Length: 118
Image (cartoon, rainbow, N blue to C red; front, side, top):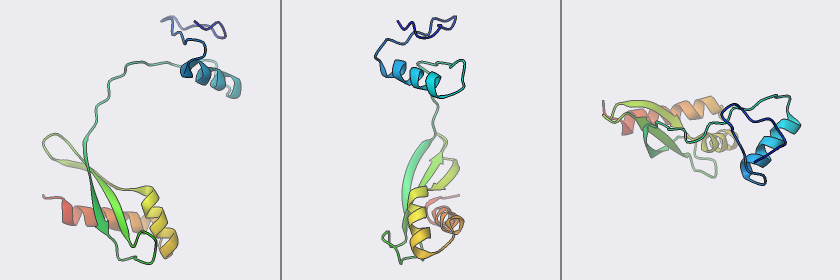
């Protein structure tokens, strides 16, 4: 176990040479932190996700106006989130000279209107 830093009461050891050990040492050397919480084996709850492709009217770009939109829902199918892929919206926005928020909201609206049943 490492001797470069004092272990937490839970004996949060990082084996010398491991990725965790290297990352901890980088963080201690290059930040002002005095301690780092280490959480292992944390359970994660996630929504069900699917992607749909929408066609925007802004076609003068390498994506030809096509953007993927992520639709997230609960197990019962209730849609709780609709998010356009940022990097794709950014390309359409920059190359078509349309504000990013206009592109992303238009993509999300199209997903709601054409791919989600009430």
